[in-house]
Image (tube, rainbow, N blue to C red; front, side, top):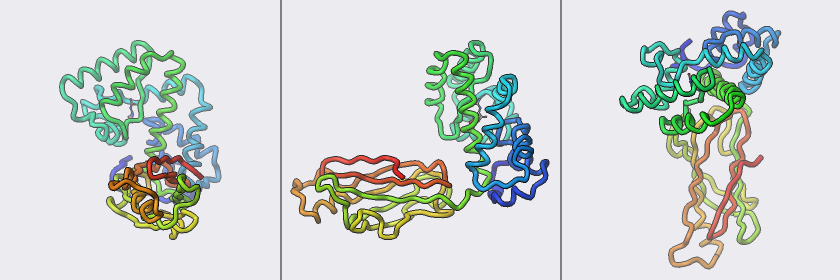
Length: 300
Ligand SMILES: NC(=O)N[C@H]1NC(=O)NC1=O
């Protein structure tokens, strides 16, 4: 199966598939382990999948309820990171893409030696392959993770590998399926200096990476409740996996509010960079601010 530019499959199109076609479509999500997709096909009959999250949950359930022996087989179905299969160009398309996104296809000789050493050390201690979802990782974070995880017990590592495998599967599903139309982004700004919603603050939204056009994708103004006058900032296909940035014009707002600011205000613009991992979910990304401090959280 190729994960490269073929258009994403709709969830509804999965429903009419035979087992063979279903496994061809999503079987590669668990590396070299089409038995996971086959079992989902049997368990979910008649096949009706309404979200990527529910398909992922069904696949995860198959793995979690499998025997230890099957789980070990699944772990060992993965290639080493920057290992022999990668060097021989024998990776699956999915693994090749992930490993190259982490820069593992352009290691120096010394870095390659470090990876080889770590892979061997890990396998001789635990007896299985080191697994890390590397799509959004770097060679530095991977090597740090090797070091930290080598200190764990075998049981903890076994569980960690399975957790990482579910994460790999989630990100693979997101590259091949069109999400359900349920996700959206909202915002709210509270002025903690006066204890009220921040009215009439300018905010811009940029997409820094991910699916869809990059750069400024929206300009907004808050209403008397501190919310965007347009309600939702992103919905539907525009609400996609990626890294985004709000810029809150906090300095202008407090100047308008008549706050006693220094000649040069302490806070001028507040940038807030955040990631959207689940395009089917509601992300509420608010700002609490005063002229001298701010914070955020993932709200609902
Ligand atoms: N060994 C290992 O973690 N391999 C995997 N990680 C990842 O993100 N893709 C893989 O193939």
